[in-house]
Image 1 (cartoon, rainbow, N blue to C red):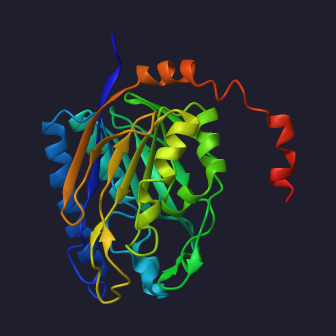
Image 2: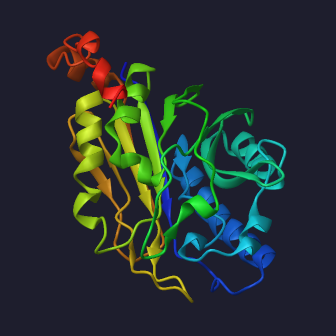
Image 3: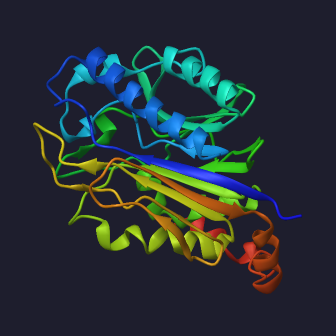
Length: 289
């Protein structure tokens, strides 16, 4: 019997301008996402991933210490606890990207993974932190991740996470495959004109090279007052052959859903023996350069 997992991705616009009160922004965005999570449950979704730092705008468009107030601890912060309760109630695995406070003044761009029984499983912290114009000032907000590339055993399969800018680096994508990932989620915030031509190129390539499913999430709309560009949506699932299974719209709040046949991973790997034919002993210079 095939192992079919129904996956879901949520892409949304923000509810407020970035000048609004931070608690009000967070509350409104959480309520908005809860509606879509409930809709996913009605469609039988087993695992869902939200967009990068889902409860606010992409505030890295400016450098302002007020956004430090949007951090929360994991797993004891209120949003993670809310989603633990939600995951248990809906019997759904939730991948939850938020702005994490580890210690006072030490902050990470993080995704928590919550199993379908409501138990917090673990977290991934974004490794590769951009800092470039126009409007991607992430080193002001995030310390580089220190979790390695974990894979989490869940009711929906073995889940890995890569976050936004990470997707430009094949090394971590390979590490997730070697660590046993069956589905890798990449919650993102990326704008047209900068990376759109790569959006449906890089991550299907990761899926093919490592023979797992990829769920790529991007928010939608123009975020004020910065308006660094159009967040162009088009969240998607692709399979281990790099084929698109479901693709979201460019400009609409949307729940993207696809059936993921996890048994296809073995079939593809038995055809393309990339892991067998690796030559790691010849790659030593890659980490020396």
